[in-house]
Length: 171
Image 1 (cartoon, helix red, strand yellow):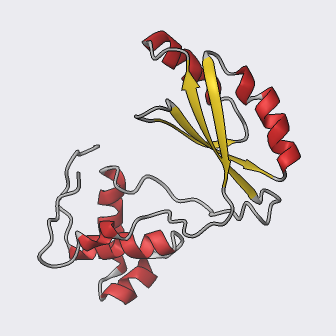
Image 2: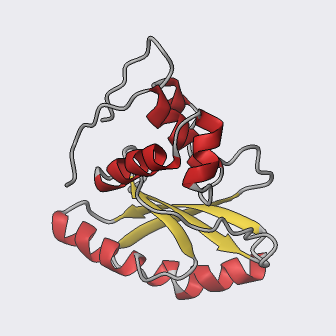
């Protein structure tokens, strides 16, 4: 039942806000915070899951604690933007195990990737074995994140929609 729009009210947005902070919150705990029954919370959560607003729950891992303290932003320019070339590149880049994000972007660069590494030597290996072997690559530019200033899994402005006087349609 993937509905493109769903009327969300202030309570729905508060449920989303609490779940984005702690995806393991129980319906009982959410109900206590919102002065709702756990049944009402469960019903609202299920509706938002079925509508595709809540797409899943996952553990947030510390990549640094797992030895991946380096983050590299990689910008890749292809030789051409013909559909077949884009498709071939996309099919292969998905196979790169070090890549956590890839997006087709506008501007001088075609693709932006985020790669996680444990060292400069490891990035050199990834560059040589993964990135430079991707099809149709004309240019690779890499920038290393020196310091993380902020990282959000959910942007706070989303919850502004649930405040009184704000538009409430999900898009």
